[in-house]
Image 1 (cartoon, rainbow, N blue to C red):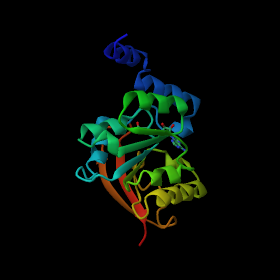
Image 2 (cartoon, rainbow, N blue to C red; image 1 turned 90 degrees about the vertical axis):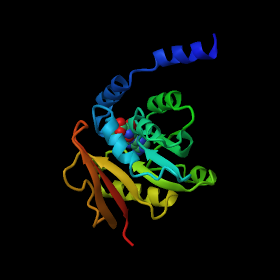
Image 3 (cartoon, helix red, strand yellow; image 1 turned 180 degrees about the vertical axis):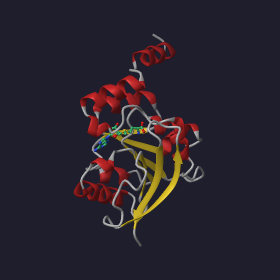
Length: 199
Ligand SMILES: C[S@@+](CC[C@H](N)C(=O)[O-])C[C@H]1O[C@@H](n2cnc3c(N)ncnc32)[C@H](O)[C@@H]1O
């Protein structure tokens, strides 16, 4: 079988993003936090926040079926700059098949492979969080913030959310918060927030 035929047959075998996403939601709704992947419009709003000329890495936590990853690449961000982390092995495999030039780590964002990320030798400029942090208790939210600080000190993270107000109790958590954008073109309508440690 030629490489092109192999690629076509793999593409056919790949489960449809929405179907895989919904199946995972049925098996663990709190871990998924949404029944369908994010929209291209929401992905574009996140991509807008990233410096396209920089060579720093973009760490995407909770990549799912890669809706945001795809938008970043479509916006002109080099796939080699992106490192995605996804806890569900089946979804991590799906991401590897879909984004051959992007690093895919099947890992828990609350227990990141910190040393491996440092060993890349390239600093992480942006952290994007797709994990439904709003559904977690404060101790877990603090643990998440510590993990982000360990790999991208002072950078904070972009968080997209369906909440109307801040999804995180940012003052209690010692974070500055800024709502950067909003779109009705997502189900449910979503906002993009930037949280970063108070100076
Ligand atoms: C709301 S979905 C977002 C998926 C995708 N980024 C999107 O916008 O369509 C949340 C994703 O985070 C993943 N996730 C949840 N907890 C995680 C954890 N502790 N570490 C890594 N990924 C996690 C879920 O498996 C799911 O794929």
